[in-house]
Image 1: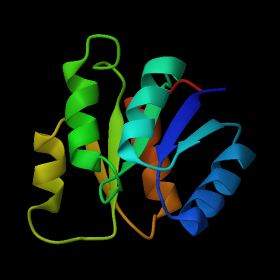
Image 2 (image 1 turned 180 degrees about the vertical axis):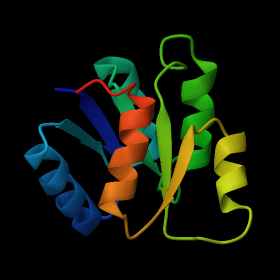
Image 3 (image 1 turned 120 degrees about the vertical axis):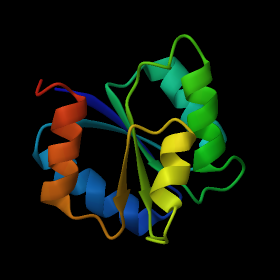
Length: 123
């Protein structure tokens, strides 16, 4: 059962995605801001991180940069999640070190496909 870290400050988004992913046998860890997300990633070593970009304390972009700069967490794939589907948002997320990008509200089948690809198909 892959461990997924979801870094998100919106409780409704957390509830929805956690419920859907735990039904699919993913173990979910949640952090409500970028700083706590970085600490959780260092402590828990999840298989994958779902990172909201608009976070309090430390933005998702800055959290991704920190995680990709640290030896212990740089190999953890990160999927950026953003409600802003603006031109260039995906490119900014990838430049910060994210491995993929998904808009919110999340299209679950598309997100699962991206997760599987980044997890190497392992479940």
